[in-house]
Length: 140
Ligand SMILES: [Zn+2]
Ligand SMILES: [Zn+2]
Image (cartoon, rainbow, N blue to C red; front, side, top):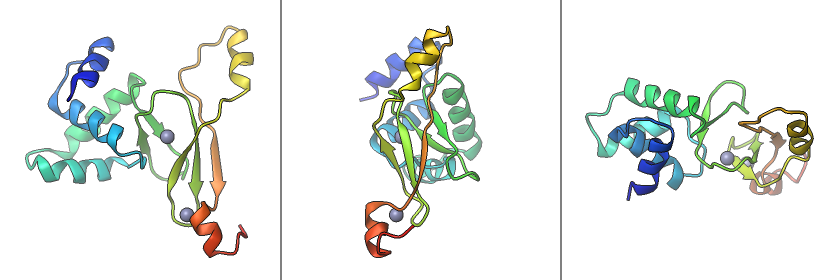
């Protein structure tokens, strides 16, 4: 079941440590954009010997290789995302939920045409999610 992640790590010339594989699998099955602590706490449940430092280091390595994306939309915490295609994010400032916005940035082609090589695209939208908007009478 780690097959696609083994290939992914190999492509980036990274050693397939159990922690890296677990983190990749976790992020591919949890599209909630968790922070490092959330990932650590959840993984520790099934791996009692897991250390926080290992998780943080693995996240750092995967981030450097652009296998994971760090999202800093809320300004004070880093949340992680393993979706490989560029997409934007919406932060609900009420329940702090982050959702993916599938939207291609029209500026990408223009910038790439100028010879830039883009690794990441971040578009941050903030406001009320549908659930919170309903509860709050659709006023921001
Ligand atoms: Zn909300
Ligand atoms: Zn995302």
